[in-house]
Image (tube, rainbow, N blue to C red; front, side, top):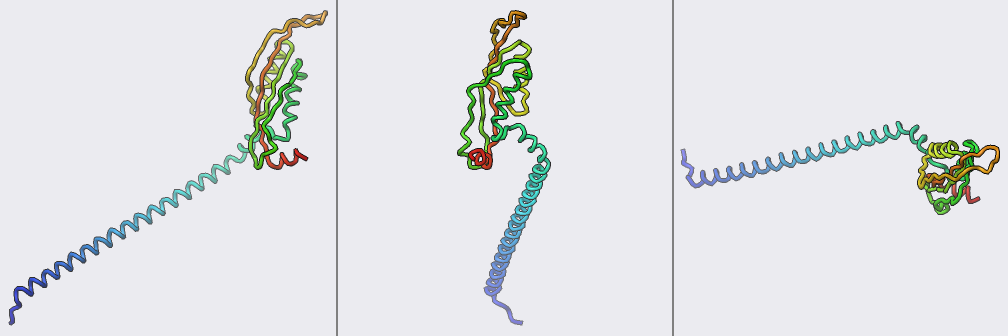
Length: 193
């Protein structure tokens, strides 16, 4: 049997060792890249599941609030019924037994509206009559079927009536009333005709 020189065995073992190191590095790289691709894939799947759940939640919320959204729209005055709103305030006087006058009616400019939006309508209201009637007007104004805000409320004693048969105490009430109108493009174009 021939003896293999020592140098050749040493060289062969060095080549085998380099080949093992390269194979180990390649295996390590393959495993790390497979793991990172799997983690990225899992993250994408989880993100998509979350998006699907959020979309479903939004659709459920949208479906469950249809009736409430319709009720909410009733809290605002349609822009086509702004005059009815002012007239309803004036009619409170005949219902409560006092004199109601409205001045300084103003609203936001609704002619330039390009899509649906809100506009504010406001008026200054003055009431005179007996105490109970004046307070009834205040209470009825606060409970109009719209979302209204009252400000600058002032009550003062005005004196006695000139009626010779029965003298009544007259009170004066003044306040500013404001509410929001829903303005739609169709409403402004039909109001302009």
